[in-house]
Image (cartoon, each protein chain N blue to C red):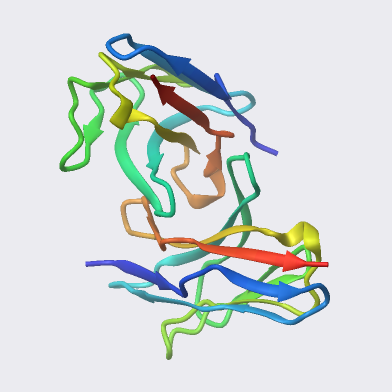
Length: 117
Length: 111
């Protein structure tokens, strides 16, 4: 079946530095990728939707200058947390929809646990 | 707008007990409905899905039926195992193919 590889699975960084998270679709073309954030004891929060070759669409309240999303190819999307602060510590998950856009294409990455110290 | 409500956790059961996790939704049109599971330290996995009214999704002994009349998609399993301990998320897919999530229900199964 469809596989999405998300890397790294865990990262610890110092406050003020930037961290890049990669999300790759391994055996299908993902025209749309979604980035989620999960707060402790809370549900997933959609951060942004990225379409290959165009600017990401951010949800209300998500700082686009802080959470940079790039979707340069049909198999790769990246989320860069810039100037990270401890409050950015969270679990970030990507999901990818295959070209047809139907739900059959939804596949989730394994998530990235970001800890900012 | 669209929304998903699921029962609060944690839900604690003994092994081999019957499981029900309630999920109700509010949506315009005819959304697709999903249950996702997140095992400790892992990402989300699709557990089962249903695309239209009266459909029953099933996987790994879990079942859920799409009930349009009650706008529900309750997750059930006849006999739970310790390995079923996880967080379960109910979700619907809206007309833009985005997923609307419930808050998640933590399930704890004791031996």
